[in-house]
Length: 238
Image (cartoon, rainbow, N blue to C red; front, side):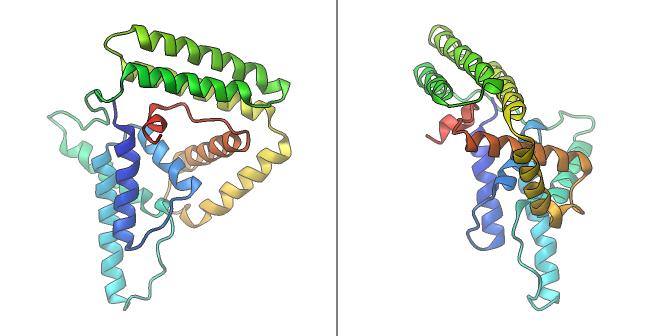
């Protein structure tokens, strides 16, 4: 299973190191990382893209006497990441292509995963949601409890399959939240995403812009209702 904790934190660390100062990643930055992970972009390609982008930036800054605008968002390196990914795939022709999959992480113990799933189920059941989404969320909570029971019984755990199931459940949760959101709330969030993404539209393709916007809406709707993320990556942060 992809080591989710390393994927996110190594990207954040590399970006901060190359920028030269600590900059907390925004909601859109984290959404962009998630789109890379879900697209199967290897961590190596992301890190290489960050380095390539900053190498070019540093060269331009030196010629400009350090008068270039400071980099303030991860989306600034998005095009470079895509170029690095394409280069890796081209280099792999005739051999094994790079993969975002890594060996299963043996640190994910069954008891710990079960506790995490049950805690998330508790949070979903405790949320005060309108009828349009509340029933769907409660159904997802029941499914999480079933997965927790299965995790205790299954040896060894198939973490990759479990993560796939959690991803599907989170997509269902997002669909339910979108259904329950008012038109005004959705419009406000989309307008915010559009404003924050405006400086990077020339560096990101239409598909990537759409993915990041949807991830942004996803995260904000969940935060507004106090709902947890379901991925095993978020268990690693606890």
